[in-house]
Length: 200
Image 1 (cartoon, helix red, strand yellow):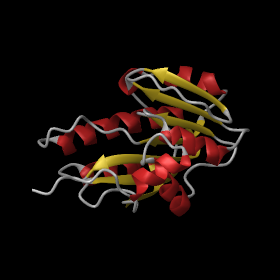
Image 2 (spheres, one colour):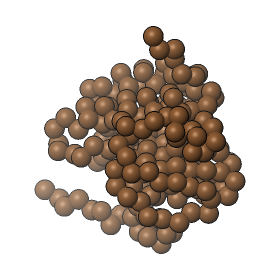
Image 3 (cartoon, helix red, strand yellow):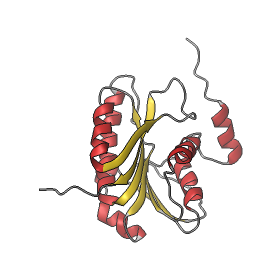
């Protein structure tokens, strides 16, 4: 079996460009295609460690924007905009506290979070994480807001895609060029958030 090559083009580019991980280029390509992160916007990055999506997000929103990163692990970085990092499980977040932190609802919710892979049931764990992201997005996004989240292709991919369509007017799946060919990961990109559903 051939050894997996990690020193690929995007890995080297990340080092040269000062990004904390090659995943920075996935967000760049998602934004280039779908205009995912608005200039001057409020952005929530779920599962943000090591911080490469926060770095790109900060570049896209500019100095007038605000970005909040959430992860179980600590994140240490410097950005040229207002930013906050929170050590927490995304399942335990208080949407109202998040909105208070930035002065209102978010314009975009991003997630590059992935489960610890075992080779068995990874797609199901990924779908579970996506549903947690959708729950946070539903209660933190402004109407018309945007979402970009990673998911592993598998048994529940279509179900998660359909659940996303309930919340957003435009939903597509896309695999950036920066994603390794062998990877099962792809991204769900959604625009025009309809607003939170009424709960009984």
